[in-house]
Length: 74
Image (cartoon, rainbow, N blue to C red; front, side, top):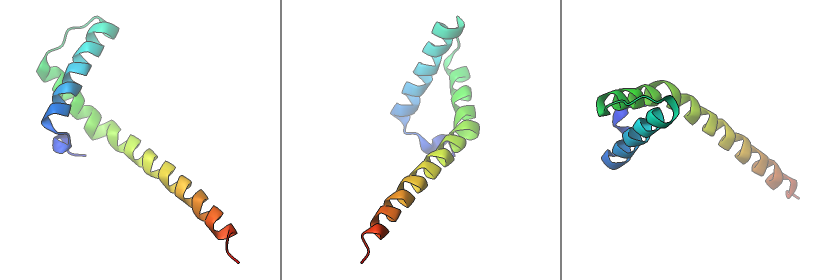
């Protein structure tokens, strides 16, 4: 996943959310650059794992629905 896959407003909100998380959960104040780098890490390393899991879940769901459809076959 490319870091540019998020539109500007969503990226800005993600950066703010990361800064708030660090402050609330870790008692650390981080700047925009550190939050943006962390977001980049998440998008590069973790997002593909979550994306692939979602695809697997969709595949299983659709596979189950296809099985239901074949039951209707005469």
